[in-house]
Image (cartoon, rainbow, N blue to C red; front, side, top):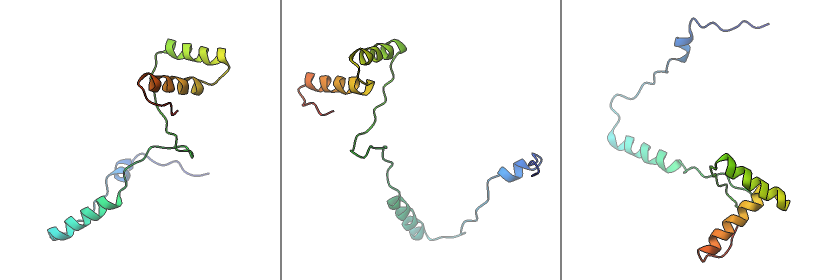
Length: 100
């Protein structure tokens, strides 16, 4: 059976590690390193489905969610299908072709 860790030295274990920095690094070297680091970092991308679809988060009041769910149940379709139809209706209302 393993021994439980002690909280006596918790502060020392969680204290940030000190990293020594070079005393007099040339400015050009530091700028090059910063540019290389910035170029290597890619912007975060949203999670996508294999077919390229992306998620949309909508906050709705409980009564609105319940009403939409009832529409889906009455038509025997998923809530996803109801929302896809709603997106297409908004696009058609504004003169855009349905794409969802």
